[in-house]
Image 1 (cartoon, one colour):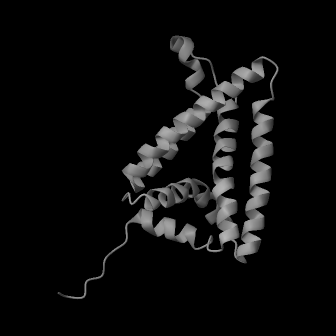
Image 2 (cartoon, helix red, strand yellow; image 1 turned 30 degrees about the vertical axis):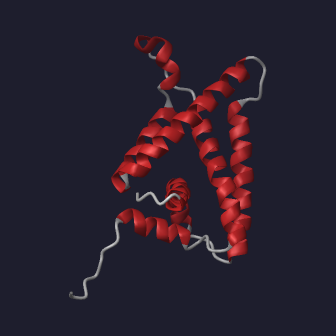
Image 3 (cartoon, rainbow, N blue to C red; image 1 turned 90 degrees about the horizontal axis):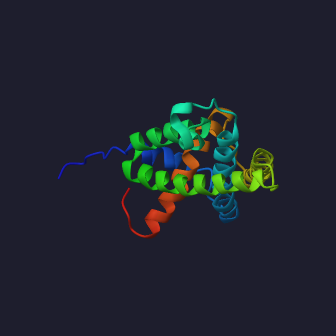
Length: 168
């Protein structure tokens, strides 16, 4: 058997790069909590941005908005990296959207204003992540931060799948 170099898949390279900034247990714990909060806050905020009402959609106008485009873009990106991870993320995002729609309904009957809640959660979760980077002693570059915002949920999901022995 010859010494062959096994080439890593793009998803493995990106997840490994993200994981390299999350080695210390305290930082990992912060990310286990903050990643879902950041995903929720970003999707919830973008979902609540005004979108033109299209009469032909009727009652389905609720589901076509800037948030649905963000989800479509994200899932397409995830699909190119790992179909299995993209399918699971799509299901998780559907559950997240259900919660967001319920919060919008609660807002109409006097509940919290969704965009304000999302901005608050986003700020608090990012402050916690900066604390995590401080604990780690290493912070990604500004350009990596944006890429990592898309990759972070896949990293977290990959950890769960690895724990159950599922190959992604």
